[in-house]
Length: 377
Image (tube, rainbow, N blue to C red; front, side, top):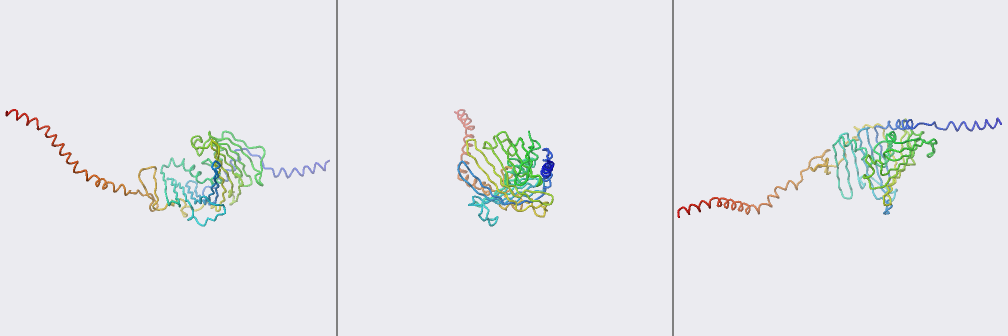
């Protein structure tokens, strides 16, 4: 009998040693944030594929994105080269010069610059907004929309403009499950939360810096979508998001996610959906680079690009690193054109003026002449 009890005790000891300690939600979020807060200034490059499936069409489009994201904790510069409508994921993409589109979003702390080129048409256009207060609210959401595939590896779930732990700390309701669940080979903490941004279920990996190893989010009409009410801000009835197959890499004391698969489904009210399937692979991660030497936050707008400033009516062109007011030739020629058009009508107009003056004078003078004639008679 004692022998059997000893054997049972021996088997139970290893089970207790590998069992992770229970945490409260706030402690778990603190551990997650401690790892993420070390990532203030960095450069991350990635090669992503995006498969868009339009179920109501039906139609599919395969895209490839080569992304370069830079930040120093305040300034942000996102650059991407896009190859659109590829035949397969194995298609070779030789150089960025062959990209179908190029996109830049830059926040330099004072102005927001959106620049895009289209190879098929040769069109180049830039939009600049210098409203600093408005930009500080707008830029995070715009960046997350553009950097869709990579934002979730920075801890920003689709539809949000800030890191998920900041959203969870303001949750309407949040709980951590009693039982941990395995994701791959790691036993993870599972958190369920209901927030103003939607409903979340997140799996936190204690072996890799408490990073998110798996995620699910559901958004509906009563939720916020990139900071604005979902209802009236989107044509969809609901949006669901999921992320899995996350792989991590350690850099010193920091764990960073380097690969992930994600799926975002946009449901229409009348039925049908659009599904966006991302496969992201980070190819380079540079921590605390010298951004000034690298020119990380210098605009990369080509000279001659048409620029729109703050919705002004003035036309600008990018020249030598800045927008310059452009004098439209059509406007410049307008006075001369008007003079040329008005010349044929000038003589008749002057004759009419002279005639009216004569009539007015005659109207005043004629009664006097008439009275003088009657007086003589």
